[in-house]
Length: 385
Image (cartoon, rainbow, N blue to C red; front, top):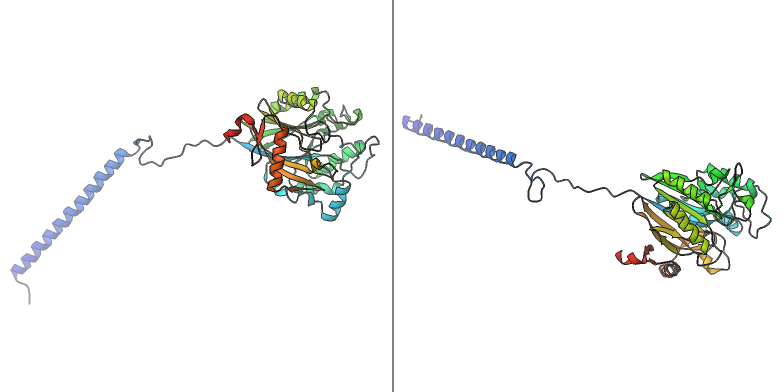
């Protein structure tokens, strides 16, 4: 049965009402969106009370830290005599079992190579101790992370010029750089310059302990860089400073098995710093000596033995890794890590022995405090850490 006219009219009015209501609702929603969008546009880019835009992402304005390098220094290394016998039994990597990871992860590692590396040569006949280490030991130095060795010392020519030339060759074959000796005077006093993290660092080596004048490098003559007269060393440092951000001097000096530096060590160290050196690290006494700061630059007078034979003097059994974190503006900050110099191997000290060693080195230093983590600090600023 069809709906009546009256019923059809009622349905039509209801549908008309619903259409108008929905249209008004849609218009209202659109109008609200337009007003809100306009408001957002007027506010975009307007700074709030902090000075930042309320709607733009806030970017942190943080300057990158200045570049720095991490350098590790160790004392005397040799692979002869009882050490060589031990290495043939335990492997040439045995000396570095406890330290290789440290050296491999830094920016550069430096050691004093207290021996010629050769199968040939004529032994020096005017010395009590004459060394000669096997070339087979050199790859292990490289694998352990040692990057550069100092040859300015009183053992590099124990096997004459022939032994020294062989040392150059074996180091070169395994990409280990060297300083303090060369084919002639110019090369012996020349720096090794590296670049790490945007910084150029120059390394130089000089010795004030040389058995005889015939060991001196000369014009057209192989030898080591002597510094009894510091004039050539001073000139070399000045030239290095012109092309490097940092200059590091490795010095061989002092008196064996003596805790305190002798006068010429302090005099030479200050002369080097006056010439432009940023850090001076010494060796030769076979024992650890203290630290001193001069004109804001650090001097480490002796790092002692590192990979060596064992004498009857207990102090020669103490050693360290000296870590320097250096930047162009702030210079170098030092931290010492205590080790035992066992026969042919460097072994970390336990906490108790490490504390005792830090205290002893602090007592040997000039106006220096060494904290429980081994940071070497000027005593006037020790309370700032």
